[in-house]
Length: 236
Image 1 (cartoon, one colour):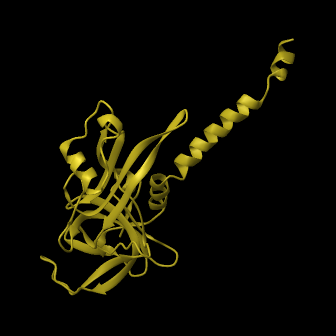
Image 2 (cartoon, rainbow, N blue to C red):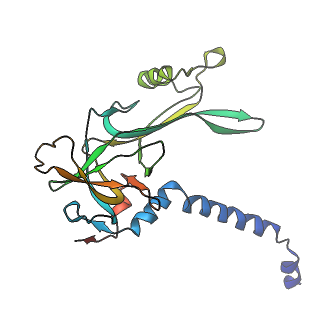
Image 3 (tube, rainbow, N blue to C red):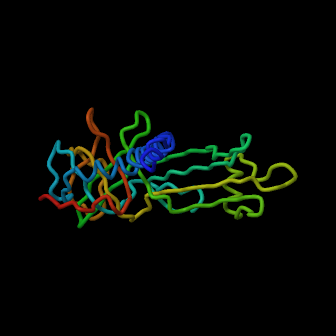
């Protein structure tokens, strides 16, 4: 009787649960962060002073600006790269979801320095020559009973977003920001190429510098995630 009862149980709930688990796993596995970390885990790590031309490698160092740095939209930190997103909670029938209102990414050329050696990185958005993942370390939000901070409210005004809806209630908004701050340590991967240096770098006595570039096969990879160099060994 027990065996008959077990066999008579519909397999549909099991299938649904299995599909959901598989979906969650695939979303995680193919997320930008995990894709970049997997790629870096398989990429040779070299010290900046030991780079070889035409080799796809990853390097580690601190970011330095080439020109006047960018200013992050909300935190106002000086940086060479920032990404930010503003989202609004939207209701649709019995469900609700976060709708992206602003999705912005800005970057500039920057140096990576480690133990007195330098490489230069020139990320470009058109055509895009890089992949990136930045840790989102600045957040803000507002809601019906949660007033936006003066800084968040000013930022919303900059992007022509009303912080209030009907009857003066606050809209449900959220903000996330990730940056590469001046002096921040990060990992970058690319194809090493020697380039002439147009302008001198303080404390750098050479007329040439290594640039990490993209090619037909590989994009430049940029991340400040602390796991980017885990389980890797420097190859000299």
